[in-house]
Length: 205
Image (cartoon, rainbow, N blue to C red; front, side, top):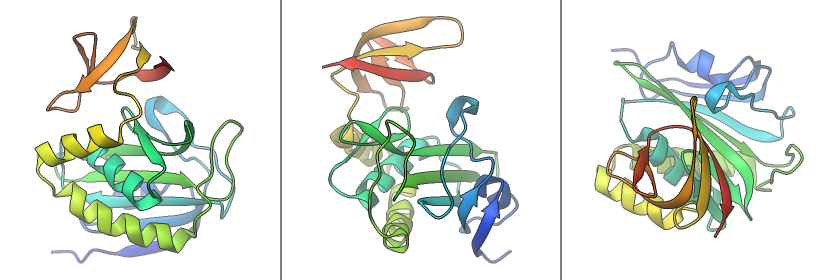
């Protein structure tokens, strides 16, 4: 069995690209990404050396995106909340995001957190990179292996989405309503409808 690797790089296209070929348990971190990706083909924008950019190679887990959100929020500190499905918010502004790319054999969990610079309208955490990374590694290990019920319960506690009116943009239509909960599979429940993916905008309380 291949031994897990910890890889620190300068500039890469994306830490996800490097991590994809590594064994489970590996971690890839970079100072800068030239083609960082978010969900739904969005680009992840950052400046060199200003963010934590890391990918973890993990066992496949249907709730990994939510588990990683919980882990990242806890690593960032008490002020950070979760917007479904995988944004990290600080004072209502995006401070980080999560992207999970899974195959049958493994899951690549990419996490980006703005530390000292952020695009307009976003937030910065202002914490040392290595300190956040160490907390994140411990939290990822814990939450990626936690029982599903614990992950869902903790995500609810950290949620900045549940109880608010939202707009969910899907490929063929838009749903507006109150985000009531997340179900056991991690789907967002909006006025009784289950949403498994989509771009969410919070409209208010």
